[in-house]
Length: 394
Image (cartoon, rainbow, N blue to C red; front, side):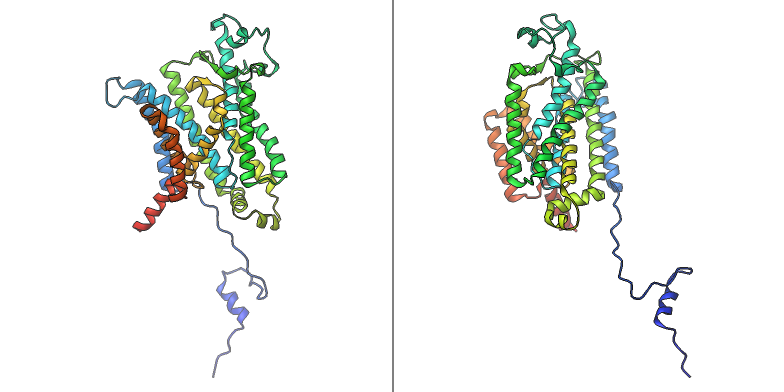
């Protein structure tokens, strides 16, 4: 005699965990979204800690405590060069967020870098005090131009706390206003790139004028102190180096967290198909404006760290060529990889430092040829090539 089989719904109920109600057979299947990936893998955290130890311990040890004649000594020139390149790497990382992950190519990020540098430069000029050539409370260039008092925009330049706030606020506010009108008008593609390049060129011309109070074509230089501490000492140079390295590592972690979040996934969706994002009920304006402003602030912070290490800031930092170079760093290293633009900044800037000494007349030709070669043969940059080689080995 055959045994009666339980109904289909009961079979499904038995397969469930005890105490869990049986699901409705007519219920639509639920879509399970992928879980959020960790900020870094175990190997990534290992590399991050190695980089942290190198910046905070190894580099100071080799520079300050190893004798000059030793092969392991890290020279002051190397400290200044690597500190400068790390500032460039922050700009490249910022470019990757706006271009690699959002699909917006900016050719004007040099202006935000320079604005952060000018804010820091104004504070450093006030720190000179009466140690200038004219023994005046005013900066030397103002005395030379027969100015009697500081202009209004120098009001808070003697406060270090206010300077830190303005380093973030000035590039961020200008980027927000510019981005709001540009993105609201749905300007995109090559038109947006041209407008951003026009913006940085206009800013460069403005800062070249003596009456603006930014030092004209000479800019700011001859810095003496920061927080009343001499700036030209090995200890201060290494302090600035370590701060720059920590800032770069901190921004890298922030960027990894950001692109892995829901906000980051929307940014990548905007990059791939903005019209579909709008059809899904998202307004791209807020997302694009937010990442644009964050990217500008990162460049401003990089500029503020750059100025005391290099010792000068002038309108040349706003030249369109500098902004194009930031895009080249991202392209050479590999867009939408975060680590790629950092690698690209080190490779290109290192090659520039060598070629401008060995063959200065060929540097621009090399830069143009490099960009063309990467576009034609390495569309995913150096990191894309590394990933391809890894896949072939496996």
